[in-house]
Length: 347
Ligand SMILES: *Cc1c(COP(=O)(O)O)cnc(C)c1O
Image 1 (cartoon, rainbow, N blue to C red):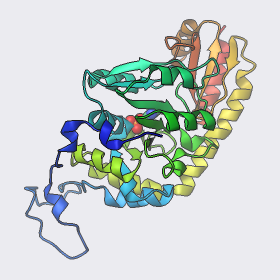
Image 2 (image 1 turned 60 degrees about the vertical axis):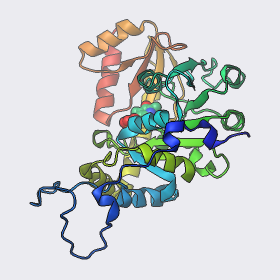
Image 3 (image 1 turned 30 degrees about the vertical axis):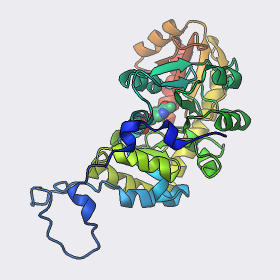
Image 4 (image 1 turned 30 degrees about the horizontal axis):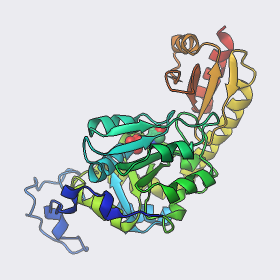
């Protein structure tokens, strides 16, 4: 393990002082205060004040739930912003590179493009596991980030612990594990291993299992040293007040979230059974997530047929190792019945 945070941080970021906002200086402590510091409109409409730039109350709620200290946590406008901040803190445009493992989530490559960073792709193996030797062979001293998506989108499987450990121990940049689907999985979150690996960064989101894609809330967890670098470049008001308050409210109804997840997993199991009997479905891939990847005889044709019945799914055929595959999100019981009826009706 030869990881040095200072070595992989961009020079300009090292010297940065974060923007100091009016609300940084004063923390509400319950006393009645007169706020004349931020040029806001003083008339209350529920959103006339700037949001807390440090997202304290929401972080406390998340910290309690996830068992991660507040200073090891950064929140963003969806995981998309969190991932972009990681690029901007550690990857020097036109010089550095990242490693991604297709077939996987498309945003890593989009963000690499936006930040002018070379994206080195090392395909997953036939059973959708990381090719550790291949990854380390493509790595050089400018390889700043390795993206591991586990459970992986669109394949649905999780990466085995031994492969991830081997990468954490041998990759000298950051290993970002995208756990967008972890709450659907019975595997342990890598957040439990933060103490063991100084190069480990975990990204989670409220967009999937927590049912809050519309409010945009992404969570980054890492060492407090990494988090404090990201905090320096984060826009001060990146998570708005409506989002913070809505998330806190939702987290208070933990029992309901657990029920929804259980129902989704139960529906997934039922769907898996039914899909086995659809003649044009050739293979159903195992899934630790809330979607199912299937291989069909002719993905374009089946996609169009379903669309005509009003059902929108994702055609993943243009991804490597995914020829003629479709990705189906598990819906409500009613939606899944519609999907099954449509699958049975087309031929
Ligand atoms: C859906 C998804 C996300 C979520 O991104 P947000 O910006 O938080 O909505 C992140 N990673 C993966 C792999 C996903 O599939």
